[in-house]
Length: 231
Image 1 (tube, rainbow, N blue to C red):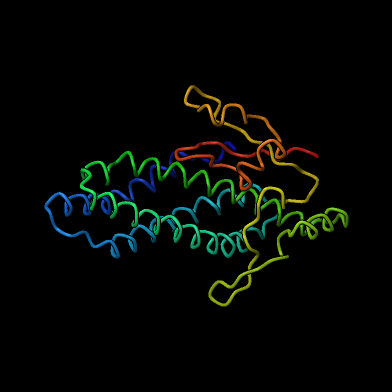
Image 2 (image 1 turned 120 degrees about the vertical axis):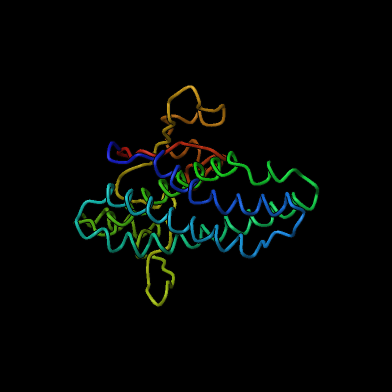
C-alpha cells in the first residue's frame, strides 16, 4: 500500500495526545488531583479524529469506485466513535488506578505509552477500514453469487446502526467480506516482528480466527495487517 504511510499517522496521533498526557503528568506530579473526566474527553476527541482519518484513507484505497468517500466517512465515523469510547474508558480507568496505587506519573503518562497506544490503534483502524471496504464492495458486486455470499455472512448493508440519524453498516469482521476473497495475516516482516505474530505471517483466516477474529492488532504495538487472497 505505497500511498499510505502508517508511521506518519502514528506520529500524528501520538503528537496530538502529547499535551494531554503532559498536563495530566504535571498535575499528578505536583500532587494535585487529575481531572480524569477532562482527560478522557480530550483523549476521546483526538483518537476519534485520527482513527477516522486512517480509516477513510484505507477504505478509499481498497474501494473500487469513486463514491466510496461518502460511505467511508459515515461508516468510519460510526466505528471511530465506538472505538474511541472503548479506548478512552479503559485508559482513564487504568491511569487513575495506577496513580492511586502510587505509580510514578512519569511512567503512567509517558511518551512510550502514547506511542504504543497510537501504533496499536492505527493498526486497528487499518484492519477495520480494509474489512469494511471489502464487505461494501461485495454487497455492491455485479455478481449475484458474490452478493449472496455477502448477505449470508452479514455483509455491508445487512446490519446497521444509527449515527446522528443516519443508518450505516455496522463494522464487519474479516470473515464477513464475502466476495470470494479470504483474509491473510501479514506482518511487518522486519526484526521487530514478535513471537506472537511471526508464526501468523501469510496464514489464512482459519489459522487465526479463533484467537484474533477481528484480525490485527494481536497485541499492543502490533503493526500487522491483512491481505485478501482468492478463496
